[in-house]
Length: 453
Image (cartoon, rainbow, N blue to C red):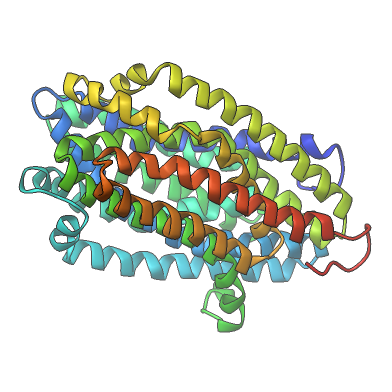
Protein backbone atom coordinates (compact mmCIF):
# COMPACT_ATOMS: atom_id res chain seq x y z
CA UNK A 1 0.00 0.00 0.00
CA UNK A 2 1.23 3.52 -0.79
CA UNK A 3 0.34 4.71 2.71
CA UNK A 4 2.17 1.95 4.65
CA UNK A 5 5.26 3.54 6.18
CA UNK A 6 6.29 0.36 8.01
CA UNK A 7 7.56 -1.55 4.97
CA UNK A 8 10.32 -1.12 2.41
CA UNK A 9 13.70 0.57 2.64
CA UNK A 10 13.40 3.52 4.98
CA UNK A 11 15.26 5.95 2.71
CA UNK A 12 12.90 5.14 -0.15
CA UNK A 13 9.86 5.65 2.08
CA UNK A 14 11.17 9.02 3.29
CA UNK A 15 12.05 10.20 -0.21
CA UNK A 16 8.68 9.02 -1.52
CA UNK A 17 7.20 11.52 0.93
CA UNK A 18 9.88 14.19 0.55
CA UNK A 19 10.12 14.49 -3.25
CA UNK A 20 6.44 15.23 -3.94
CA UNK A 21 6.44 17.49 -0.88
CA UNK A 22 9.52 19.25 -2.25
CA UNK A 23 7.84 19.73 -5.61
CA UNK A 24 4.67 21.00 -3.95
CA UNK A 25 6.56 23.42 -1.74
CA UNK A 26 8.67 24.61 -4.66
CA UNK A 27 5.52 25.40 -6.55
CA UNK A 28 4.07 26.98 -3.40
CA UNK A 29 7.01 29.37 -3.29
CA UNK A 30 5.80 30.75 -6.59
CA UNK A 31 2.92 32.38 -4.69
CA UNK A 32 5.33 34.80 -3.02
CA UNK A 33 8.63 34.59 -4.88
CA UNK A 34 7.19 35.25 -8.33
CA UNK A 35 5.30 38.22 -6.90
CA UNK A 36 8.58 39.63 -5.59
CA UNK A 37 10.40 39.06 -8.87
CA UNK A 38 7.73 40.87 -10.89
CA UNK A 39 7.40 43.68 -8.36
CA UNK A 40 11.16 44.11 -7.96
CA UNK A 41 11.53 44.75 -11.69
CA UNK A 42 8.76 47.35 -11.99
CA UNK A 43 10.11 50.46 -13.67
CA UNK A 44 10.95 53.34 -11.29
CA UNK A 45 9.13 51.92 -8.24
CA UNK A 46 10.55 48.37 -8.11
CA UNK A 47 12.93 48.63 -5.15
CA UNK A 48 10.52 50.60 -2.95
CA UNK A 49 7.58 48.33 -3.86
CA UNK A 50 9.74 45.31 -3.00
CA UNK A 51 10.48 46.88 0.37
CA UNK A 52 6.74 47.37 0.91
CA UNK A 53 5.98 43.71 0.23
CA UNK A 54 8.75 42.75 2.65
CA UNK A 55 7.01 44.71 5.39
CA UNK A 56 3.98 42.44 5.02
CA UNK A 57 6.17 39.35 5.51
CA UNK A 58 5.71 39.15 9.32
CA UNK A 59 1.93 38.96 8.87
CA UNK A 60 2.08 36.22 6.25
CA UNK A 61 4.52 34.37 8.49
CA UNK A 62 2.16 34.73 11.45
CA UNK A 63 -0.62 33.17 9.36
CA UNK A 64 1.73 30.26 8.66
CA UNK A 65 2.53 30.04 12.38
CA UNK A 66 -1.10 29.53 13.36
CA UNK A 67 -1.48 27.02 10.54
CA UNK A 68 1.46 25.10 11.99
CA UNK A 69 0.01 25.30 15.49
CA UNK A 70 -2.89 23.08 14.53
CA UNK A 71 -1.67 21.25 11.40
CA UNK A 72 1.77 20.14 12.59
CA UNK A 73 0.35 19.62 16.08
CA UNK A 74 -2.38 17.32 14.82
CA UNK A 75 -0.38 15.52 12.14
CA UNK A 76 1.77 13.35 14.47
CA UNK A 77 -1.32 12.26 16.44
CA UNK A 78 -3.06 11.56 13.14
CA UNK A 79 -0.12 9.43 11.93
CA UNK A 80 0.16 7.59 15.25
CA UNK A 81 -3.59 6.84 15.18
CA UNK A 82 -3.11 5.42 11.68
CA UNK A 83 -0.21 3.31 12.89
CA UNK A 84 -2.42 1.97 15.69
CA UNK A 85 -5.23 1.27 13.22
CA UNK A 86 -7.66 3.69 14.93
CA UNK A 87 -9.38 5.35 11.93
CA UNK A 88 -12.11 6.96 14.03
CA UNK A 89 -9.56 8.80 16.15
CA UNK A 90 -7.68 9.86 13.00
CA UNK A 91 -10.86 11.42 11.57
CA UNK A 92 -11.60 13.16 14.87
CA UNK A 93 -8.16 14.78 14.86
CA UNK A 94 -8.52 15.81 11.20
CA UNK A 95 -11.93 17.40 11.83
CA UNK A 96 -10.80 19.23 14.96
CA UNK A 97 -7.82 20.72 13.12
CA UNK A 98 -10.09 21.86 10.27
CA UNK A 99 -12.40 23.59 12.74
CA UNK A 100 -9.57 25.41 14.51
CA UNK A 101 -8.04 26.56 11.21
CA UNK A 102 -11.38 28.12 10.22
CA UNK A 103 -11.88 29.90 13.55
CA UNK A 104 -8.32 31.20 13.78
CA UNK A 105 -8.24 32.47 10.20
CA UNK A 106 -11.29 34.67 10.76
CA UNK A 107 -9.75 36.20 13.89
CA UNK A 108 -6.46 36.91 12.12
CA UNK A 109 -8.25 38.51 9.17
CA UNK A 110 -10.22 40.90 11.37
CA UNK A 111 -7.15 41.99 13.35
CA UNK A 112 -4.97 42.44 10.25
CA UNK A 113 -7.61 44.35 8.29
CA UNK A 114 -8.76 46.73 11.02
CA UNK A 115 -5.33 47.62 12.44
CA UNK A 116 -3.12 47.17 9.36
CA UNK A 117 -1.77 50.76 9.38
CA UNK A 118 -0.58 50.57 12.97
CA UNK A 119 0.80 47.08 12.35
CA UNK A 120 2.80 48.07 9.26
CA UNK A 121 4.43 51.05 10.95
CA UNK A 122 5.24 48.84 13.93
CA UNK A 123 6.89 46.39 11.52
CA UNK A 124 9.27 49.02 10.15
CA UNK A 125 7.38 50.92 7.45
CA UNK A 126 8.47 54.43 6.51
CA UNK A 127 6.19 57.03 4.96
CA UNK A 128 7.66 56.12 1.56
CA UNK A 129 7.21 52.34 1.85
CA UNK A 130 3.87 52.31 3.70
CA UNK A 131 1.77 53.01 0.59
CA UNK A 132 3.10 49.91 -1.17
CA UNK A 133 2.84 47.72 1.92
CA UNK A 134 -0.77 48.76 2.54
CA UNK A 135 -1.75 48.32 -1.11
CA UNK A 136 -0.49 44.73 -0.98
CA UNK A 137 -1.69 43.75 2.48
CA UNK A 138 -5.26 45.06 2.31
CA UNK A 139 -5.95 42.64 -0.56
CA UNK A 140 -3.69 39.76 0.49
CA UNK A 141 -5.38 39.20 3.86
CA UNK A 142 -8.71 38.35 2.19
CA UNK A 143 -7.12 35.01 1.35
CA UNK A 144 -6.25 34.16 4.97
CA UNK A 145 -8.85 31.39 5.41
CA UNK A 146 -8.06 29.83 2.04
CA UNK A 147 -4.32 29.92 2.73
CA UNK A 148 -4.63 28.30 6.15
CA UNK A 149 -7.01 25.55 5.03
CA UNK A 150 -5.08 24.63 1.89
CA UNK A 151 -1.72 24.53 3.68
CA UNK A 152 -3.02 22.92 6.86
CA UNK A 153 -5.07 20.18 5.21
CA UNK A 154 -2.25 19.43 2.80
CA UNK A 155 -0.24 18.17 5.77
CA UNK A 156 -2.94 15.56 6.35
CA UNK A 157 -3.15 14.62 2.68
CA UNK A 158 0.58 13.88 2.78
CA UNK A 159 0.22 12.18 6.15
CA UNK A 160 -2.45 9.89 4.70
CA UNK A 161 0.12 8.59 2.23
CA UNK A 162 -0.97 10.61 -0.81
CA UNK A 163 1.88 13.08 -1.40
CA UNK A 164 1.16 13.38 -5.13
CA UNK A 165 -2.35 14.61 -4.42
CA UNK A 166 -0.83 16.96 -1.87
CA UNK A 167 1.48 18.26 -4.56
CA UNK A 168 -1.52 19.02 -6.77
CA UNK A 169 -3.06 21.12 -3.99
CA UNK A 170 -0.26 23.61 -4.37
CA UNK A 171 0.42 23.10 -8.07
CA UNK A 172 -3.06 24.14 -9.19
CA UNK A 173 -3.01 27.40 -7.26
CA UNK A 174 0.58 28.24 -8.12
CA UNK A 175 0.02 27.64 -11.83
CA UNK A 176 -2.93 30.00 -11.74
CA UNK A 177 -0.80 32.53 -9.85
CA UNK A 178 1.88 32.32 -12.55
CA UNK A 179 -0.73 33.06 -15.20
CA UNK A 180 -2.50 35.85 -13.32
CA UNK A 181 0.59 37.73 -12.07
CA UNK A 182 1.77 39.22 -15.37
CA UNK A 183 -1.80 39.82 -16.53
CA UNK A 184 -2.86 41.75 -13.43
CA UNK A 185 0.48 43.46 -12.70
CA UNK A 186 1.40 44.55 -16.21
CA UNK A 187 -1.58 44.23 -18.58
CA UNK A 188 -4.09 45.77 -16.19
CA UNK A 189 -1.40 47.99 -14.59
CA UNK A 190 -2.43 46.96 -11.06
CA UNK A 191 1.20 46.72 -9.88
CA UNK A 192 1.40 45.65 -6.20
CA UNK A 193 -2.39 45.21 -5.92
CA UNK A 194 -2.32 42.86 -8.91
CA UNK A 195 0.25 40.63 -7.24
CA UNK A 196 -1.89 40.41 -4.10
CA UNK A 197 -5.11 39.69 -6.02
CA UNK A 198 -3.45 36.95 -8.08
CA UNK A 199 -2.28 35.29 -4.86
CA UNK A 200 -5.73 35.41 -3.22
CA UNK A 201 -7.48 33.88 -6.24
CA UNK A 202 -4.86 31.14 -6.43
CA UNK A 203 -5.16 30.34 -2.72
CA UNK A 204 -8.91 29.89 -3.08
CA UNK A 205 -8.39 27.33 -5.86
CA UNK A 206 -5.86 25.40 -3.74
CA UNK A 207 -8.23 25.48 -0.77
CA UNK A 208 -11.10 24.04 -2.81
CA UNK A 209 -8.93 21.14 -3.97
CA UNK A 210 -7.66 20.27 -0.46
CA UNK A 211 -11.07 20.46 1.23
CA UNK A 212 -12.77 18.44 -1.51
CA UNK A 213 -10.26 15.60 -1.04
CA UNK A 214 -11.48 14.97 2.51
CA UNK A 215 -15.18 15.39 1.67
CA UNK A 216 -15.47 12.83 -1.12
CA UNK A 217 -16.86 9.35 -0.42
CA UNK A 218 -13.66 7.60 -1.52
CA UNK A 219 -11.39 9.59 0.82
CA UNK A 220 -9.26 7.40 3.13
CA UNK A 221 -10.25 9.72 6.00
CA UNK A 222 -13.05 12.27 5.98
CA UNK A 223 -13.81 15.61 7.61
CA UNK A 224 -16.93 14.83 9.63
CA UNK A 225 -19.24 17.71 10.68
CA UNK A 226 -20.13 15.78 13.84
CA UNK A 227 -16.47 15.92 14.90
CA UNK A 228 -15.92 19.62 14.12
CA UNK A 229 -17.31 21.16 17.28
CA UNK A 230 -14.17 22.11 19.25
CA UNK A 231 -13.28 19.53 21.90
CA UNK A 232 -10.82 20.75 24.50
CA UNK A 233 -9.78 17.18 25.32
CA UNK A 234 -8.38 16.86 21.78
CA UNK A 235 -7.17 20.43 21.28
CA UNK A 236 -5.14 20.42 24.50
CA UNK A 237 -3.15 17.48 23.10
CA UNK A 238 -2.67 19.08 19.69
CA UNK A 239 -1.55 22.54 20.83
CA UNK A 240 1.53 21.53 22.90
CA UNK A 241 2.97 19.54 20.00
CA UNK A 242 1.99 22.17 17.44
CA UNK A 243 3.51 24.88 19.58
CA UNK A 244 6.95 23.90 18.27
CA UNK A 245 5.90 24.65 14.69
CA UNK A 246 4.05 27.75 15.86
CA UNK A 247 7.09 29.02 17.71
CA UNK A 248 9.36 28.36 14.73
CA UNK A 249 7.12 30.37 12.39
CA UNK A 250 6.04 32.89 15.02
CA UNK A 251 9.61 33.65 15.95
CA UNK A 252 10.38 34.03 12.23
CA UNK A 253 7.79 36.79 12.30
CA UNK A 254 9.42 38.31 15.39
CA UNK A 255 12.87 38.14 13.80
CA UNK A 256 11.54 39.77 10.64
CA UNK A 257 10.04 42.64 12.63
CA UNK A 258 13.25 43.18 14.60
CA UNK A 259 15.36 42.98 11.43
CA UNK A 260 13.18 45.46 9.53
CA UNK A 261 13.03 48.01 12.34
CA UNK A 262 16.78 47.71 13.02
CA UNK A 263 17.67 47.96 9.33
CA UNK A 264 15.44 51.00 8.91
CA UNK A 265 17.44 52.67 11.70
CA UNK A 266 20.94 51.64 10.59
CA UNK A 267 20.51 51.35 6.81
CA UNK A 268 17.19 52.78 5.65
CA UNK A 269 14.60 51.43 3.20
CA UNK A 270 17.31 50.06 0.88
CA UNK A 271 18.45 47.52 3.48
CA UNK A 272 14.87 46.54 4.34
CA UNK A 273 14.47 45.75 0.64
CA UNK A 274 17.70 43.73 0.66
CA UNK A 275 16.36 41.66 3.55
CA UNK A 276 13.23 40.96 1.47
CA UNK A 277 15.46 39.52 -1.26
CA UNK A 278 17.53 37.53 1.25
CA UNK A 279 14.37 36.07 2.78
CA UNK A 280 13.27 35.01 -0.71
CA UNK A 281 16.62 33.35 -1.44
CA UNK A 282 16.54 31.62 1.95
CA UNK A 283 13.05 30.25 1.29
CA UNK A 284 14.19 28.75 -2.01
CA UNK A 285 17.48 27.30 -0.76
CA UNK A 286 15.98 25.93 2.48
CA UNK A 287 13.18 24.14 0.67
CA UNK A 288 14.87 20.78 -0.14
CA UNK A 289 16.25 20.49 3.40
CA UNK A 290 12.87 21.28 4.93
CA UNK A 291 11.11 18.87 2.57
CA UNK A 292 13.33 15.96 3.55
CA UNK A 293 12.92 16.75 7.26
CA UNK A 294 9.16 17.23 6.97
CA UNK A 295 8.77 14.20 4.72
CA UNK A 296 10.46 12.09 7.38
CA UNK A 297 8.10 13.23 10.16
CA UNK A 298 5.02 11.12 9.31
CA UNK A 299 7.31 8.14 8.68
CA UNK A 300 8.90 8.55 12.12
CA UNK A 301 5.50 9.05 13.78
CA UNK A 302 3.97 6.01 12.08
CA UNK A 303 6.83 3.73 13.07
CA UNK A 304 6.81 5.12 16.60
CA UNK A 305 3.15 4.14 16.89
CA UNK A 306 3.97 0.72 15.42
CA UNK A 307 7.04 0.39 17.73
CA UNK A 308 9.44 -0.06 14.80
CA UNK A 309 12.25 1.87 16.46
CA UNK A 310 15.09 0.50 14.33
CA UNK A 311 13.43 2.07 11.27
CA UNK A 312 13.30 5.41 13.06
CA UNK A 313 17.05 5.28 13.78
CA UNK A 314 17.82 4.37 10.18
CA UNK A 315 15.59 7.20 9.02
CA UNK A 316 17.32 9.75 11.26
CA UNK A 317 20.72 8.77 9.87
CA UNK A 318 19.54 9.04 6.28
CA UNK A 319 17.74 12.34 6.86
CA UNK A 320 20.81 13.91 8.47
CA UNK A 321 23.28 12.93 5.75
CA UNK A 322 20.92 13.83 2.91
CA UNK A 323 20.29 17.31 4.31
CA UNK A 324 23.97 17.83 5.17
CA UNK A 325 25.08 17.12 1.60
CA UNK A 326 22.43 19.42 0.17
CA UNK A 327 23.09 22.38 2.49
CA UNK A 328 26.82 22.18 1.74
CA UNK A 329 26.05 22.48 -1.99
CA UNK A 330 23.61 25.35 -1.39
CA UNK A 331 26.19 27.16 0.75
CA UNK A 332 28.76 26.93 -2.05
CA UNK A 333 26.23 28.40 -4.50
CA UNK A 334 25.45 31.44 -2.35
CA UNK A 335 29.09 32.22 -1.64
CA UNK A 336 30.08 31.89 -5.31
CA UNK A 337 27.16 33.69 -7.00
CA UNK A 338 25.57 36.24 -4.64
CA UNK A 339 25.32 38.97 -7.28
CA UNK A 340 23.35 36.71 -9.61
CA UNK A 341 20.94 35.73 -6.82
CA UNK A 342 20.31 39.39 -6.03
CA UNK A 343 19.75 40.29 -9.68
CA UNK A 344 16.96 37.73 -9.99
CA UNK A 345 14.82 39.92 -7.73
CA UNK A 346 15.87 43.45 -8.64
CA UNK A 347 17.57 45.51 -11.34
CA UNK A 348 18.48 48.28 -8.88
CA UNK A 349 22.29 48.52 -9.04
CA UNK A 350 22.59 50.02 -5.55
CA UNK A 351 20.53 47.22 -4.03
CA UNK A 352 22.51 44.55 -5.90
CA UNK A 353 25.88 46.00 -4.85
CA UNK A 354 24.98 46.34 -1.16
CA UNK A 355 23.01 43.09 -1.13
CA UNK A 356 25.87 40.98 -2.51
CA UNK A 357 27.92 41.59 0.64
CA UNK A 358 24.90 41.16 2.93
CA UNK A 359 23.88 37.86 1.34
CA UNK A 360 27.35 36.36 1.83
CA UNK A 361 27.28 37.29 5.51
CA UNK A 362 23.79 35.90 6.07
CA UNK A 363 24.46 32.48 4.48
CA UNK A 364 27.99 32.01 5.83
CA UNK A 365 27.00 29.10 8.17
CA UNK A 366 23.98 27.83 6.23
CA UNK A 367 25.16 24.21 6.46
CA UNK A 368 24.50 24.17 10.21
CA UNK A 369 20.77 24.45 9.56
CA UNK A 370 21.00 20.70 8.92
CA UNK A 371 21.24 20.07 12.63
CA UNK A 372 18.46 22.46 13.62
CA UNK A 373 15.94 21.08 11.10
CA UNK A 374 16.92 17.47 11.83
CA UNK A 375 16.61 17.80 15.59
CA UNK A 376 13.33 19.70 15.38
CA UNK A 377 11.88 17.12 12.97
CA UNK A 378 12.59 14.21 15.32
CA UNK A 379 11.35 16.03 18.43
CA UNK A 380 8.09 16.97 16.69
CA UNK A 381 7.47 13.56 15.12
CA UNK A 382 7.97 11.68 18.41
CA UNK A 383 5.88 14.06 20.55
CA UNK A 384 8.82 15.59 22.45
CA UNK A 385 7.02 18.93 22.41
CA UNK A 386 8.85 20.66 25.27
CA UNK A 387 12.26 20.05 23.72
CA UNK A 388 11.04 21.12 20.30
CA UNK A 389 9.67 24.37 21.73
CA UNK A 390 12.78 25.07 23.77
CA UNK A 391 15.20 24.80 20.86
CA UNK A 392 12.93 26.87 18.63
CA UNK A 393 12.95 29.64 21.22
CA UNK A 394 16.65 29.25 21.95
CA UNK A 395 17.79 29.85 18.38
CA UNK A 396 15.28 32.45 17.21
CA UNK A 397 14.64 34.49 20.36
CA UNK A 398 17.71 34.11 22.55
CA UNK A 399 20.19 34.01 19.66
CA UNK A 400 18.94 35.67 16.44
CA UNK A 401 16.71 38.34 17.95
CA UNK A 402 19.13 39.26 20.72
CA UNK A 403 22.11 39.45 18.35
CA UNK A 404 20.12 41.45 15.78
CA UNK A 405 19.44 44.07 18.43
CA UNK A 406 22.94 43.98 19.96
CA UNK A 407 25.45 43.72 17.10
CA UNK A 408 24.43 46.85 15.13
CA UNK A 409 24.72 48.88 18.34
CA UNK A 410 28.27 47.78 19.19
CA UNK A 411 29.88 48.83 15.93
CA UNK A 412 28.72 46.36 13.27
CA UNK A 413 25.98 48.62 11.87
CA UNK A 414 23.61 47.06 9.34
CA UNK A 415 26.05 44.15 8.87
CA UNK A 416 25.26 43.06 12.42
CA UNK A 417 21.73 42.11 11.37
CA UNK A 418 23.08 39.68 8.78
CA UNK A 419 25.86 38.32 11.01
CA UNK A 420 23.31 37.31 13.67
CA UNK A 421 22.01 34.51 11.44
CA UNK A 422 25.21 32.43 10.96
CA UNK A 423 26.20 32.77 14.62
CA UNK A 424 22.80 31.44 15.72
CA UNK A 425 22.92 28.66 13.11
CA UNK A 426 26.14 27.27 14.55
CA UNK A 427 25.26 27.49 18.24
CA UNK A 428 21.53 26.75 18.02
CA UNK A 429 21.81 24.02 15.39
CA UNK A 430 24.50 22.03 17.18
CA UNK A 431 22.75 22.35 20.55
CA UNK A 432 19.47 21.06 19.11
CA UNK A 433 20.99 18.09 17.29
CA UNK A 434 23.20 16.98 20.17
CA UNK A 435 20.21 17.09 22.52
CA UNK A 436 18.15 15.00 20.07
CA UNK A 437 20.95 12.44 19.76
CA UNK A 438 21.43 12.08 23.52
CA UNK A 439 17.79 12.19 24.66
CA UNK A 440 15.98 10.44 21.79
CA UNK A 441 18.19 8.55 19.35
CA UNK A 442 20.28 6.73 21.96
CA UNK A 443 17.24 5.97 24.15
CA UNK A 444 15.02 4.31 21.55
CA UNK A 445 14.49 0.67 22.71
CA UNK A 446 14.36 -2.58 20.76
CA UNK A 447 11.46 -3.03 18.35
CA UNK A 448 8.19 -3.93 20.07
CA UNK A 449 9.16 -2.56 23.49
CA UNK A 450 7.71 0.51 25.19
CA UNK A 451 9.63 3.71 24.55
CA UNK A 452 10.33 6.21 27.32
CA UNK A 453 11.83 9.32 25.78
